[in-house]
Image 1 (tube, rainbow, N blue to C red):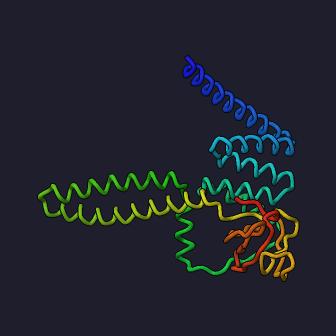
Image 2: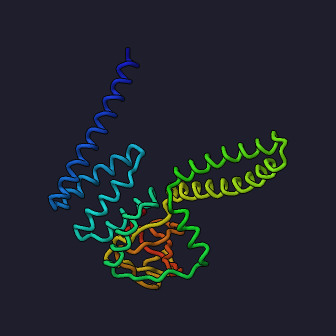
Length: 254
């Protein structure tokens, strides 16, 4: 009897949680349409916090939250949430467009270090889909690979065997690429090794010491790569390759 009560309790709590999130989303959307962006932000943040607590995140919610912050004039928070949305759904063109526009409103304009054009092309191709989609593509290619191998081993006609052999080679290569993309995106989502500067002005130092020399300053909304941590300090790297240390309080992880 206790097990039955426990199961019904879990189901009730799950239903209540979903119902609360749905009501909050509707209220947040209504507040946004009514241009009450502060209330909309508060409600969306509650849904995000609940989702993180329950082990689930939504790119759409981060996108809407980013829009609310943008309308409220908080570019750093807008960029942070657009980046989080892209981490979950890198192929969303609306999010990418809004992120580019939000970046025009921040102070730091840092030119990225030059990369080989093929690397940029591969990254762009990889970001067309999220990790789940690439994993599904990989499974589909694996099934096609097995069919091609079957045609090679169990058919007597020479042209079919040749077609099956070369098709299997091509499919195997693309299967590895799809699975590599899926693994890379999932790894980025789990490791969260990038962040956004939240302080109005953050000092970047030569070492993890407040008395060390200041190299330069970054301002709110700038994206950084997190290399390592040392106590309350983080070694960061910006788009042009410059590296330095700053306090954890100055940034928020994507």
